[in-house]
Image 1: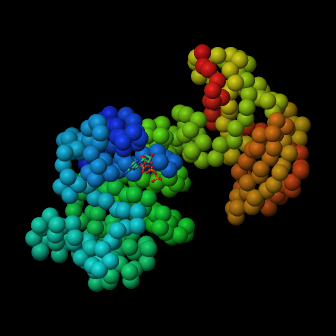
Image 2: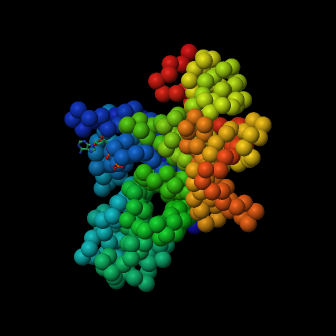
Length: 363
Ligand code: ATP
């Protein structure tokens, strides 16, 4: 199926207070029809609150929610075209798979013949037709999740909300289900929002990721943009692994590192020469060379972690910074033992992130 069934969603100036606690602070966001969005952020950043406002379980203290251009804050949850997959699926334990999927349709007083046809269509979509008569307790975690998704899609929602949908699954099954659910939602053409605190899940599932911190949006972007060009130190630390090197901006295009080397790169305009800065390097942007090689940063290997096809080497710079280096394992690259002196070379200077050291005033 290639039809676009999803609707666009716009959030404008959403603030939400629980008593004196401000859970959401000025959330403004536009989501396109059929887009897959991940809300990502640490515990307590406001993801669930935002999801509940979109679903209609909570009314925002301030701001507008528009589905397909129409304001919906006043519309109760059961009258919104919003499907919900809850964290532990929340299937009715005493109802069969068929009855679970039929539930929302019956609540909407859908004629029995339409209910039957729609449930059959949904169970076929999630490949669960053969288990229609089972109770949820007789299903595996992955099967329960498929039923929960079929139930959410049965009401023909314009948007589906998934709250930590993979947290109840073990690691191996999780990856399989991520692939399956992504292709299912994309194929079905519905707009979807996944709440997660797992950055790998967000990176692998979403068209765009919304990174939240303390009730605010830090950055919205594609997985590549957030990984390659994080706008803030928080995003840089939250998405992927970051190696930080302390230094001083010696000229608009030159940083002198405490670890004893110079790096040429363009600093953002407005950053005063002399500012204390942090350079961020992804683990795959560093290669190892012989100690003392020209331009290389001196370091000592602390340990090597073999990870199947790859290995991670942890090395300490002369100024005490811990650097993780990712490289493929092959017969040609032997693991390096601890205490070995090495040189660290930055492979791609354009991939370096530069941030003002926290608490350092900018010009
Ligand atoms: P988690 O990943 O742990 O589920 P979250 O990002 O979903 O966290 P929220 O549950 O949206 O975060 O909570 C945002 C903030 O609002 C937190 O500071 C939380 O303590 C507070 N909060 C949430 N629900 C309530 C409530 N019912 N009453 C008071 N404070 C609340």
